[in-house]
Length: 130
Image (cartoon, rainbow, N blue to C red; front, side, top):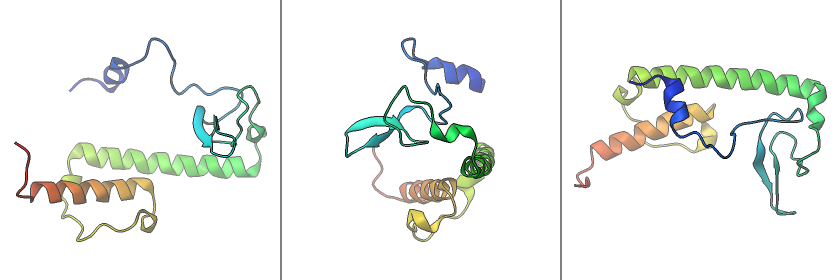
């Protein structure tokens, strides 16, 4: 299989740089939409002014807690990716039913159970596409 860096650059746009954060923001422009003003903005601070610096950039306690949470999420995500690559997830027995997303500790847990549930439902289905 190809190296991850090679795969990542296969579909890279020549017109726009992606995932570029500016002015102290932790998210990219356009990551949040304000339905009241019908404007795009930054998800980190909910600002719709593209030239404004992030008010959370100063480093208050909330930002530090968010950063710790992000690191924990990243560690869980990497663990889930490693399990997926090892092929262990699809070999697990499927859940009897899929619970609501809010019943899971994190997004990765829900996604893993959803894929496992869907995959086994599809494999055991008699109505497969030709």
